[in-house]
Amino acid sequence: MAKLPIAISMGDAAGIGPEIIAKAFQAEPALLQGCFVVGDIGLMRRALALLSGVPPALAPIAAPQQVGQVPLRCMAVLQPGPDTPAMPYGAVSGVAGRLATDCVEWGARAALRGEVAALVTAPVHKEALSAAGVPYPGHTELLQAEAAAHAGRPVAEMPVRMMLANPELRTVLVSIHVSLRAALDAVTFDNVLQTLRITHAALAAVLGRVPRIGVAGLNPHAGEGGLFGREEIDTIAPAMAAARTEGIDAQGPYAPDTVFMRARTGAFDVVVAMYHDQGLIPVKYLGVEQGVNVTLGLPLVRTSPDHGTAFDIAGTGQADARSLIEALRMARQLARA
Image (tube, rainbow, N blue to C red; front, side, top):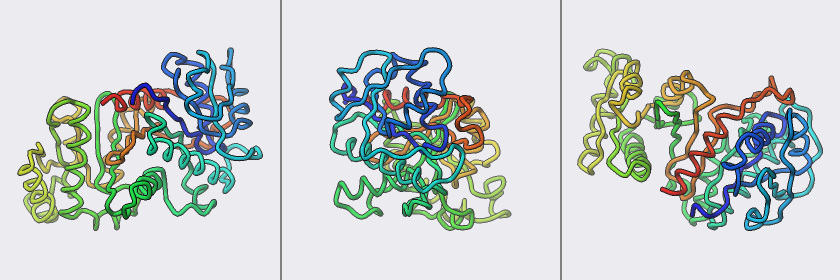
């Protein structure tokens, strides 16, 4: 699988996605050899114009297997549809949302057909997706639907989870892009157990051993024995007990304000967090330039940078490509796992 090319979806063309892709090809030509962009050729040319120094050459291709014919220091671009008119930088656009979705769908389907080793996704803007009529709030849900359709299964039978990782910390979320009130309702026995199963399977494949999973409680001090809530007693601990009968090393639940520090110093390989911000704030605080988003549970490898479209600096040439570069490194590692 690692000999196959890696697809990089362009992301929202009104944001920094095309720029960070171009900068990655410029900064890390050896790492990017064998990779190609799924995006609009004209908009990727626009991104190349933002670079200082000598930009990579742009090489249009018509199929993934042509990547092997592209020389080093060239950026291969596969355009999945007709030309898209240039849209202003930094503005929500349904046109950009539609193009970003088309690129992700093309890359996902190529990965599911076994034509590419992995899909690395540049950032999309959730409002732009909505403006385009896309019924998914983000990459994770869109890719879940694509994988379920490819397998001929209901989406509910293709459970996925978000993992954010950097060199110091990994965290996996029980719920993803839902309101906080809905996230509290998502802390159920089945959801926690399913998260532990997905986390165990994914990390075992990468580490080559049983991963040590630290589990965060939902409430302050992990409920303090029921004084601050009973979710730890009634829901989280029973799910962990069930997981341990399956050979999963799930420890806790621990106070959410300390479990990440313990993981960072080596007590755990990963932390399972109960909701989006609980898990992502610690990772992002350590620095988004090294963070990588990985979708667990899919029958394909998908990674992305740990940041958004950065509309405030789009088109200025200031975007930092380091998180995308780390996402590409992670994709190569996972494709070999």
